[in-house]
Length: 437
Ligand code: FES
Ligand SMILES: [Fe+2]
Image (cartoon, rainbow, N blue to C red; front, side):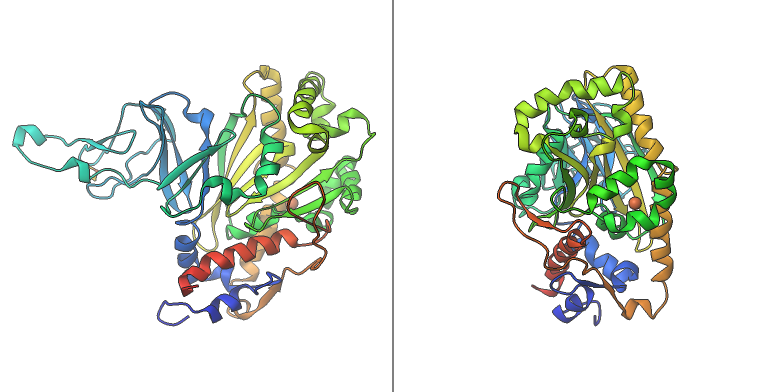
């Protein structure tokens, strides 16, 4: 990298073409962080929230696209807008609360106010003092495109971005399997709760593409406490049941394709402990016939584990949650976690789903602290000057990828790092744009 401009030689050094090695620099360098801020987070579609958070006109929530603070709104005409949270007068943060309902967003500095569509509406003392300001030119910066998929809101700042459906590609099939089990869309029932991580954003994102390989070493104490996890690990080692799926768009997920003929509870898409809980199990059992009818038998046998939609949306369907890993510098990120359920959930099931999710994947849950510590250790390990010139290995299971006659994407061995490779190949493709590729 010379004088801030990059070449394809740099890109080749950062991520090998096949995704099998990545440079330590991509996790620690401030320059590379700035490049990916533009080439990934100003370009790609990103999840910004759940439609049920802004059901009524005037509803708004704050969210983030990369490091950019945004406001997701529903205007009077029921359109969804994603607005940069920056006042056009002097650049102050416009909205300082997490959510609300209002006809205007008013800046606390000099009082300019904006409609929920981002148009500048009010400039204090304008009429009294006779100033002429062309308000039509001073609206908020907006995401170029906003689309929804099964109740999830996505946005991009790139006016030339492909339609969301094309961006999601084969991942749509699996997202539909997770989110389209019922006629009704999933809604937010808890969160988003937020915590800081000492991690480069890519490390949690790659982990949730599918990293069965870390479970035995990282989560040994959790497995000792929960023999069910050990059984799941057994299943993970057979590639008939456990599938690591990648798509050419750089999305990746891992799922069990449960064999036919098992006890019916084993097909339910939530953690076995939930199914065994009186009241809760019955609720989730009650959804299964509708899911089978909508999705068909084959898809209703898919029990998803984790998934990452490039760049930073991860999904943990067994815990009914969505997660964004938001960058905050090369060595810091934030985890934002939305817990999902259905409108007709009885209160006790809602409460159970939320707290059971926290018990495992909350910041002090059964598994999360193990991972947070590992990811912080990666930051520490890569901090020195030697590491930034080293390559790190993401090549496990190279060549095991194959197609499946019935399920889309490429399916690799469950202990492979095919998801990591797909993720980094897509990252490479995005940053290569800065080298003119
Ligand atoms: S900075 Fe917002 S009104 Fe002046
Ligand atoms: Fe983990």
